[in-house]
Length: 319
Image (cartoon, rainbow, N blue to C red):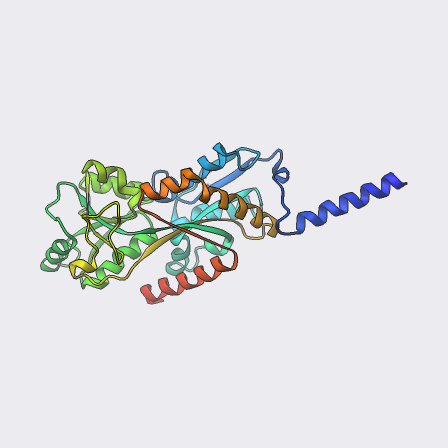
């Protein structure tokens, strides 16, 4: 009787512990594969960051079971998050990559379910936008490009975009300069870059991490940065404001979440895992190599940050 009573008490204690934030242990995931859903195509900035996170988790053995990467692109993040909410609903063994696109998409298309299906866990970085043209293009500065665009009929010049935040960045440029620019939308930053390299568009606004390799080879040229100061890695590329173009600072936030409804303990567990990822030498080197800023925001602070970002996006879109 005593053994049976002790077993019941022990089981009750375990059940209680599973409900308390901060006590989730790695053993909770024993025998399960974790899915890391990437709602964007292979090769874009979101995918590249997710793969760095995956590499750190795997190589540093931050979880005791395999982590499978699952790319589900389409709809500005809606397809991937739709997959997650349908097949991994409230599952604590699921991570999903979230960023500005997953927040902007439902503002533009109210029927799209994206960030509303996710419990945000942690933001890990901020990406600034850079104005890129092909390496052999005639434009050496953003000011030259804008002057040329103003002298031509509306929408003469095409921009490749790889997501809703890219669309927003082009919108910011157009509004700041009084120009009408044509946008050609692709499924990822990788496809947008390919279009630029192939000469199918005149320019692209993207995050440095998507373009850095081709920037180093000279295949693309950076002609302006959308921030108040120059990048230390790109000291010869002037800011838009230095060129007389009064664009506001516009950045892409990038983070991870879990499916809405996952236990609070799982959110705390993944906060701990991601804190180790961000602190790792591999991730810090990745940020440095790609001119990105570390921005660790979690818990209530992340919720407040997202609310402020939504207000900004709605103001820019007139929504």
